[in-house]
Length: 401
Image (cartoon, rainbow, N blue to C red; front, top):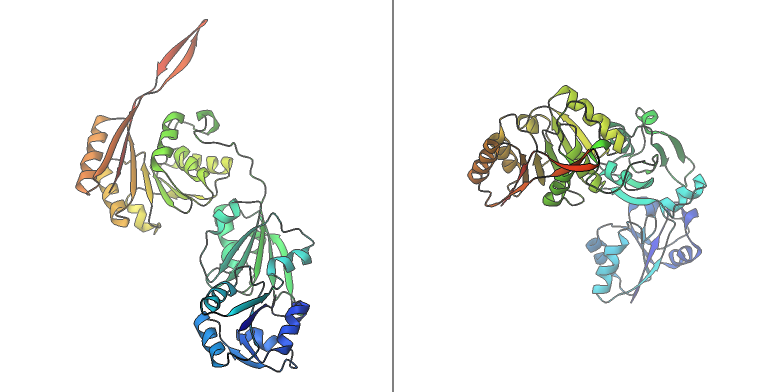
């Protein structure tokens, strides 16, 4: 038996395709969300049955398997639609599935704005959480479907909090209906506005002019008098931490922020928290953050490990400790309590710090421990010659369970 799935676009019957209209007109049984069923023209005479969960839809179909049945979905059946799960379930039960696609929200909004959407990053924040700032940093244009905890106001506030208040935000409400409202302004100008939770949000951010690659030259960072992890050591740290998109990383004792900034540059979807208590260093981190456009890095003023709970920081997947203010044991114990599977990397230039770190790691049961010493020399001109000048050797202590 054949079941027809119909994409209804925004829910307004005017956005139905001719094929979808014909299928619904002939249907004896129409199944879907109440909002969509109520929007159908009165002359569609089929029985209207409310259901959105795949199993509930299946039960209503099995009540009358010989009838002509249409299941309706908002938007397009192939764009963040419940049609995906329903199709798989029906095919598993032996039903033949016919799909009539609909007009998606991004298609409709793009047409209303006179824009192309072929290069836009498409994100669903409808009933699910998402990394708003990370997604926006992945491309110059990002489209969000909203609803649930992530609303247009959520997106606007997160952009402004990250320093992206100048990004152009378009919010589309009640699209295709008589009370349709489309507004475009910088995010910071929309902070006090209110919007319907179920809306479409299109973000355009300025292009980020930042150098490529990793292991950036020391001279590219603003430094002042604050200690900074050198280029060659930074490159080794990035390799040893093996940070992946979607992970959360602490940079403890961030200094100029050079390590945290390089970690944030690995992927816009990496969330980095640079923890530092020295005022001059905090100012430098903020300046370097803007310099490289790493708005997925959050500057956290304070002293570890107390600040972890004071700021309610998210659970870290990886932690780099470049400075501990004499509290190495406390920091390692606290991050292990937050995440027993944390990947830890500590840099040390003093033998005493190396020993303290090893003792703390063993006490917390971090059995996978590796110590690497990095000794770097750089050339310095001396007349017509070039002499190698040694930098301070650095220990990198890598630990995990």
